[in-house]
Image (cartoon, rainbow, N blue to C red):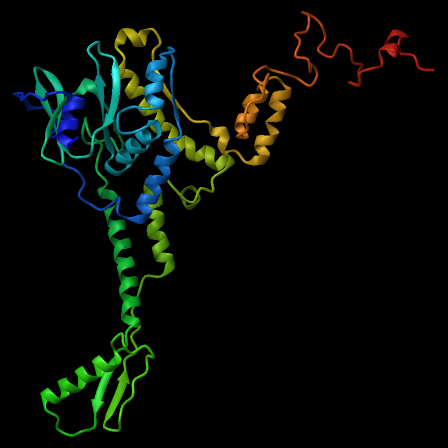
Length: 405
């Protein structure tokens, strides 16, 4: 299927509409051009974006009103091209690189959501059609797509200047340029020091310019080519080679690390997050600062754009959740067995944290004081059948008034 054919299948036949420019509240020009920099081409930026996208893609969608059809669509196959994990990964990637992500909501004849499509990043503008807000996208192949604002879930970061788009990433371009220059300087320094450099001096008097050039070319072809694997040059008494000691100045390690740290701070990341070394409290802080806000924004936007006011009034909402306990340390996971003993968790819930398969009967709350999982009679002591020391089997002593021989 061609790109244009896929667009027609997803969005239907696009009709030319007479539209006018949309005016924002602050008078800002409602037109946006894509960032032309090389943010995603930088290895440090891509490592940050990849880490954020990978952790975000682990979330699961939950529909509060029990709409299993929509919940399955969100988690399994939001559209014909991607599964639920790929959908979250792509949306988060677009969001981080361009600070604005549009998701088109495809509906059937009854208005129900049947697909969610992240729109490829391109130039766009806000237009007015019949008093309603529409966004016109100029796709890479030249196709123009006009979508109603109500059919677009919009996520924005650095939301300041425009009412519709987030601000660009111009703030980080200086650090990217400096880091690129430092990397190129290192590469050029390695190349320059790997070659034989020097001056060939002839002791013959009054050589013509042609003879000087011929002497140089003969020396270069004999000793500075790939055929000279030994790296040794042999000269007679009429020639002298004077080496040039080239010591190029390059950025030191501390300077390069500071430039990387600037990029980490811009994305709210650090070396541990990029290298997957976050556990415990460090992971909790990372999740609450970088993953949870995005999931909240996505859930709120999809809930408002997919459901009507009446449906939301009946409690319909979409919530994205992630199991944060999966990132606890092994010691902390094992300590959760106390929650099982206190009937705060089921055995299978605890086993899920340890990535273990469920057991038969493990979905019921159990306690070490009540291994048969029977419900005590109302008013009965939870420690009935045990003496004060918690050791069963001394009922005879209790019957004798607690006397000992």
